[in-house]
Amino acid sequence: MKKGMALLLTALLLFTMAGCGDGGKTNADETEKETKENTIDVKKEENTGDAEKETKENTDGAKMEDASEPLVVAMELAYPPFETRDDAGEPAGVSVDLMKAFGEYAGREIQIENTAWDGLIPALQTGAADIVISSMTITEERKELIDFSEPYANALLAILANADSGITSIDDLNQEGKTIAVKSGSTGHMYAEKNLTKAKVLAMPDESACVTEVSQGRADGFIYDQLTIYRNWQNNSDTTSAVFIPFQEPEKWGIAVQKGNQELLEEINAFLAEYKENGGYEELTEKHLAEEKKAFEELEFQWFFDLDE
Image (cartoon, rainbow, N blue to C red; front, side, top):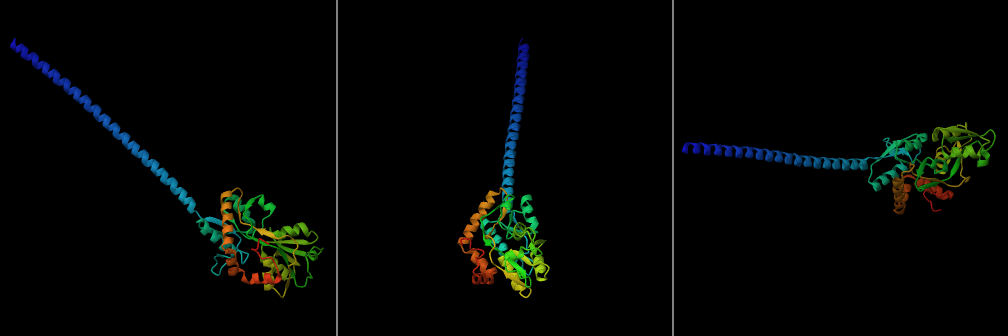
């Protein structure tokens, strides 16, 4: 009896220990599983946070990169002293200095791109350039394609005539047998095509070619702005004469941007107002146009930057 009881107690004790062992193993497994899942969740949250942080940093970096991209400014470097090159071949002149000042104002690097005249507007339309400044007159036809800033300068057309042509007025050019040289696409070209229908209009690719035609007697006159005519007359005084009698309203020059780029346009207009207020145009005149300014005063011409008159 005692032996039987001992065996029974032993069996019960082993069963109880076995049950406790299984229960301990199950709890440990569940705890380990839970710990593992929690660790994975934490890592997942950390990875998600890192991804979000990286995405934000990448986004911020892209914005900073965009802001640091240079503004591409297209101009034809063939019109001194406004758009030209210095002795080292670098872009120089009134328009170049004006754009450098705008770059400082806007906190942007300026990249000048020498562009043929007939490629200036397409450069804006295709996005190859952000800005065009190239002594470009604001016209209704051009405003259909691009947007212009407020005027920064004005000019009047004049005539460089061959010294032996007898040309003393615009009417003298509008005659059968007369040949008028014009720079292709310029407002002088537009004026001649519209108003001087009796004469032959000879469109040339650049200013120097027009001057050569007149100087050598193959054209009777060259129509361009007063300053250009004055400078070329001074450089070719033996073979040319100049006619400064006004025959149209003053032209207004503007800085152009891609159509619809209102943000850049407003920034340019704000800059121009501040630049004028701070005497920027006087500095440009003193640096690039001092001799011409004196001559214009003697001839009683309206100066380029006198927009209020």
